[in-house]
Image (cartoon, rainbow, N blue to C red; front, side, top):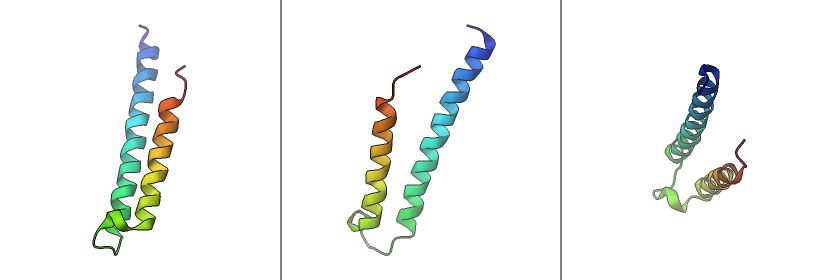
Length: 65
């Protein structure tokens, strides 16, 4: 495989891991800022999780190039 092709693949894989880590960080920060004793009972946190799951599901269904 050509060097540039390998580097492009690695770049995309890294971008994907960074995006996933940033999304996870956003959920943790949401939970930290929550006043609920049980964060799973917080409507705002539940919505943040639903948005994350929906976004990840959409990415998983995206066709590969």
